[in-house]
Image: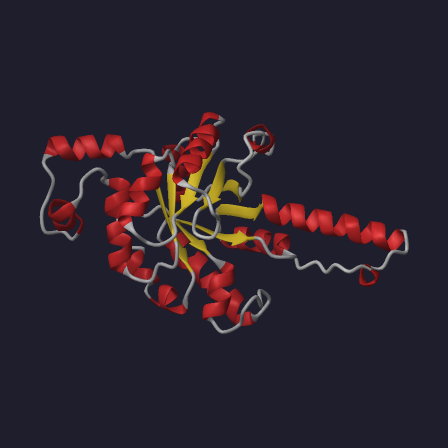
Length: 272
């Protein structure tokens, strides 16, 4: 899938499916390619992946037809350009709370390599671009996808205005940070959390912009289905490290129980 195709699907209300990839093993390319996904999500905010390795991952997954979408560590337009130069086709910016942040990211993702005062004047509506330059930039960035993380009460309050910024393709809920910001950490069944997620999805879809939730917590599958029925169409399901942890923990727990080896009898504790 190309970035252009993914943008069209998101804006038209069709669903796209992906997962988070932490493993940097080259073998993982063939494994993930069997999963009937449209994109992979590579996180450089919380995961230690250097620039060269990130570039190999982006080019590898892109070669498999899996759109590489990368989250940068902060809403910095220069970091956005760096990951796009590395081969990313989609950009997720964390903890977005203001229109100004979205405008700057729009400039980086949709109008690179333009920078400086000329770019600032254009994205703030103070000037227009020469026809030849506008045509070049549109073609140069046609496959770039811009996605913002909404992870706070302030982000929700300002979402209506942020959704008016042109060229924004999708909104992604970061459930862990959002629950913490709401004062109900990891309480994903709390009415206030569920209300916030529903509000974000509704606002984004009403603006014909994609919406999704990075659902990685226990019991998330049923919620994902519910959110999709509400209109969420950027389906970001779990991740390789989460699924490994869950499956391995279930297997080892069953083995210990069946063989009557209680975990408390060992000198080791396991934090999941």
